[in-house]
Length: 165
Image (tube, rainbow, N blue to C red; front, top):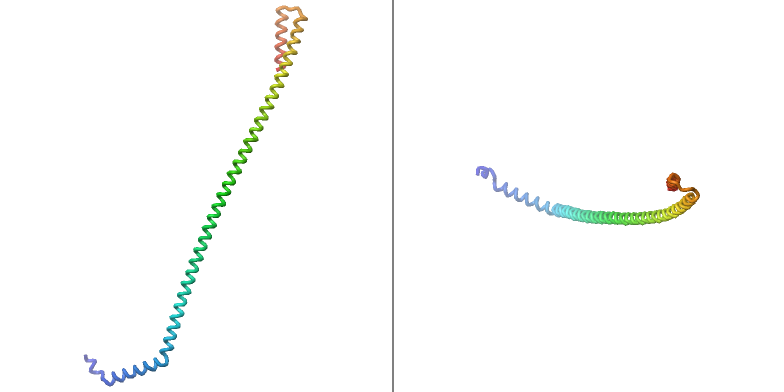
């Protein structure tokens, strides 16, 4: 309260009047410019925020589009890999089937060839046995039969039979 003693009413009134005059002068000449500057600045900041939000939304949309494309590419790659695996299995099955059929043909041809060769060998053996039998019979009739000549004829016949086989 002591400070109030030193302040005079005239000084306070003069200060208030000076303040009001300064306020009206500033308001008259600078207030509108200051408000328009602040409004312009506020509008610019607001527009920059809107632009930033728009760019952010566009970036998010692009990221989503790229992710969707990436997912589609991955799905397509997986699909193509599965198709290639399936095609490879089909080709493998075809190759195995063809190889099995060719092997069966070779086996069947070999069996037929063996049967044919066996029949030819049997026929040839039969002819040889007939020839040897005829020869042995004619030898028996030409020689006088004794036990020793009988054994010799049989041994000769067996030796010739071994030679034929």
